[in-house]
View 1 (cartoon, rainbow, N blue to C red):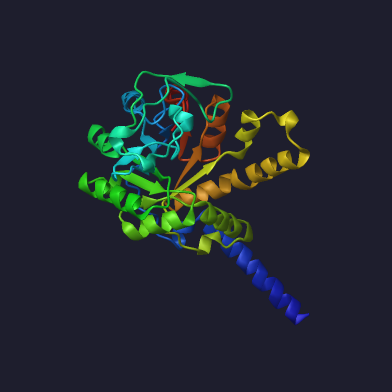
View 2 (tube, rainbow, N blue to C red; view 1 turned 120 degrees about the horizontal axis):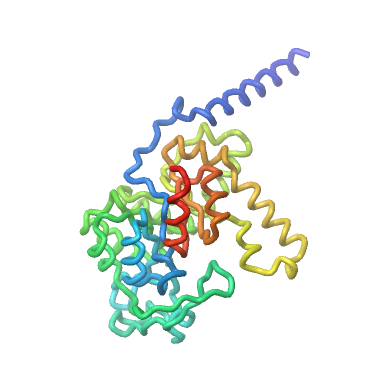
Length: 312
């Protein structure tokens, strides 16, 4: 009887302490200092309104008042850091060649019309078809936060991006990382003054800690929790052609990830929560109602109009 009492008492104490610290993490952790706070994030500069990752897209988004530009980086053969989502340029230029095999001057132009990845059966047209250098973005928008996806596990790429961030004194305006654990680890090791995102492995760890009640007790070095909204997969694909098990996995992932208690806890610890890539008003509303700090979108104009009517 006494053993049962002690077990139950210990378990009860753990649950109460965990619940208290989940609501009030400041009792254990000093909130991270937020260098900036972003609600409106333009994915690839706004891939639904201009050709993705082009200077035209970035200028359009910044002129609209976006809080942050999200972009992707690769390295050319002559070690130039370029802004492009794909290593292989077949999808975006029609030329089956890798960026790493060409000098910057040899890169082909974008096609005049590109599919919008996160919007079903939708294309975007544009006249600015040049793949820009990362330094051009830094020079054009010295005060705009930039979220950089390091697309390749390449030490030289990571070092070059770090050097550019330092050269333009943007440590306080830059976030970098990738879903890959090794890439994020290298980024942090290369320059710990630049904020990092949670990689996929660390997202899963965080979820495990959250559902076991351990999250409030564990410190994190990452400052940005960037995750997809799994339910949008049903919009991008045809649900009737998906198996029951596939739909269940999407539902389960959405249920586990989209948790207001989780987002509120992270926000209280100074960790910003960004959800991607949302392109519909009901998706924006759901994300912000759940407590997300910001939303990544391909349609910066649409998100701006939504935020004009959504209380901060």
